[in-house]
Length: 104
Image (cartoon, rainbow, N blue to C red):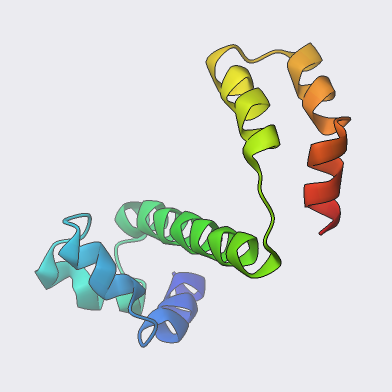
């Protein structure tokens, strides 16, 4: 709980907790409990959701700044999502487009 409290202290001014309340993921009255790290079982899920949202925003920012076009990678990712298999994963990991994107 102390760990989540420390992260909540850092995130308090980021706007992330307010986004969670605006989208309905977090009840407005629960914001203080989220920031302080109380209610461990309830808020461990919310920290994961918020971290995933920050990762998506960070990756989108990277794509915009680098001018990368991940269209060649998106089709194999969709195939992998619809039919997970080791062969498709290996094919994606060894593709030139994926390697270039990851190196950037």
